[in-house]
Image (cartoon, rainbow, N blue to C red; front, top):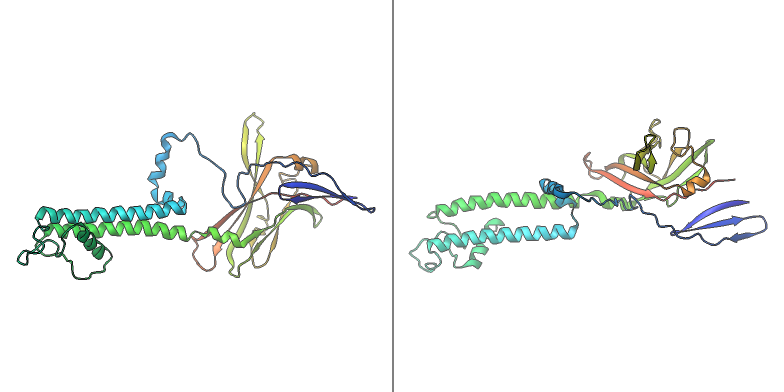
Length: 317
């Protein structure tokens, strides 16, 4: 007789087979598990009691904008450009208003600061033409306006800064390789079985794309609460699971699905756990796969995938 535990969604059902037939026991009740890292790689961590430390996010504004969601990025992108355009158009309108160009716009003998600027809409169109380097030639700065020349230089510098900041932010956000994780598949179940005469924890990983992962490396972290001999409670103690670091097996050539193995020996955190204790023990294993996208060829374009596997253990009798 052998017993196998099968996973159906979040329910667990014991299937008992024998020579006379098979039967099903009642499904075990659902157990809500709060993950530290979701399967999509999102960490379920909320920072609280920061107080005045929230100002540190503004000190690294570029990274803060990159980490925002797309809807907030697009909102800030549109808002910044709109405010900058309206501000600079207002400056051109103020110069024309102070010089009296608005009242003498149709006087052929008068030389204005900016030709053919009659009101705020025309000032706004002049700014857009110069900022976007369209240059229709109908509105232009004359040499009788030194303040306009200074404002034009300021406009060019400000426009370059805004373009570099916002376009750079959008480019970095679009080039993030988070979607690359959709074509890297992990096995739904991890198993503990005998391999090469040793008790081994195993799961599989595969790459669906034809493009290779250069310098792919895999690591495993065990998150488990423990108490030190001094009585200190560590709620999220991190232990490293050896998946071939000493032998180089953690360096993957990911052209076909590979089986990642962790030998449960005396150095393994699972060495003192029995089959029953593993079913009741509270722990989480985070698998980290990193590498370089072959199509980019840039060492800085590292892909980090944090995938939490809910482990399904079975033992062969």
